[in-house]
Length: 159
Image (spheres, rainbow, N blue to C red):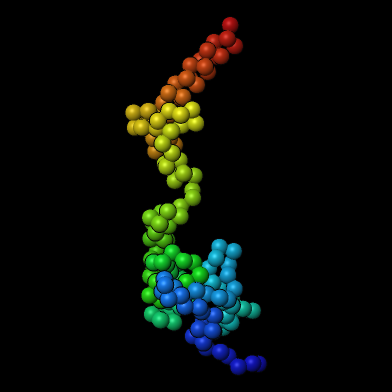
């Protein structure tokens, strides 16, 4: 079997330091979502195990981390492995960090950002259907109009 190269050397050989930002950009393989990835041989596992490069960098510089801990980026640059740009958090911290940095693309966040309904009515607190305030933002004017149409059509069907 070949010589085993220490992880620190493998990491260092795939880093490009960017002086303007301070980021250490991973130049090796990337995941589909843009994070650096490195394959490691792990005792008891068959074949190489893909591991995120920023997690390895954190471990190399600060020591072991729990499996359920997340390594977050202060710089918000996914391929960055600079340990000064990394910090630990749990999944909730990771979600909050994503929202605070404007990377949350969930439907609920998109809806919260809307200021007007599709018909141009302002989505103010006074113009939201109360029963739906915490599940969706429904325009009271449009909802009332739809209810009137529904009652009118139901009356025609019963006649």
